[in-house]
Image (cartoon, rainbow, N blue to C red; front, side, top):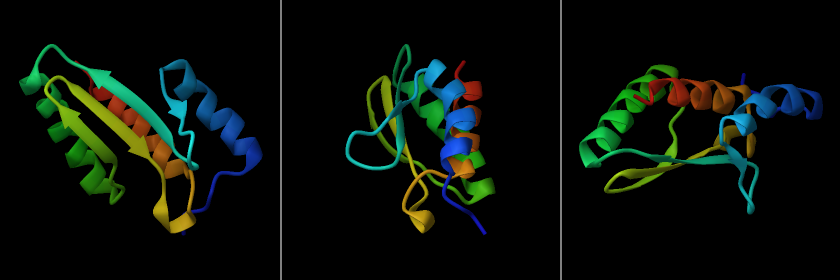
Length: 98
């Protein structure tokens, strides 16, 4: 069963993500990042690659795409906040940027 990140786990798990450009959402327990690409095709390709991992891990992002920008929010609805699943998907998304 998925659990909400403890205070200790938040420090060690989230700090590397903050260094990579993720930020805490202002209005809820979630992390967010804006990815910029050269064009729509690259942005959509990123979303396609990320979608395959999200589906495999059954953990799906909230995201918004306009042209070359993809805005991502990650949270775990089952625990009403951040879990290790969010950090895992964030790390994977960072690795998928071309």
